[in-house]
Image 1 (cartoon, rainbow, N blue to C red):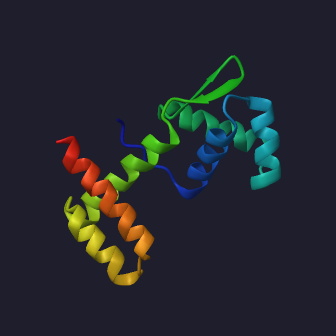
Image 2: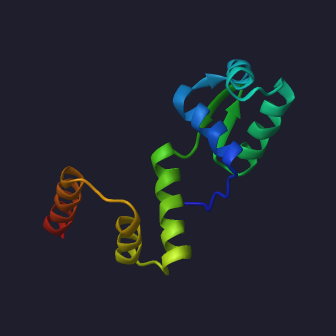
Length: 121
């Protein structure tokens, strides 16, 4: 998958598209006016930029994503781990839980994911 570098505003815009897709570009502009306080030209400028990056598509006035929200945030998470923890998931987890306690339920859920991964091998 492509490496999508998005700023916070572009991410919020993509989230709006993911929440409403497929969506007419005019309706998208109305939502952005309400939620982001944007004028119509701002919406179309950001839309054009995200289409150029290959994240979204605007065909005949209907906007859809070319990359799902899950794919985008998964790739973003992988990039953070690669850039900040030299690709080490255990280092990331250790850093994360050293600052934020996880509940017993969360620990059980993580253990189930690990167990499922091992069984899949």
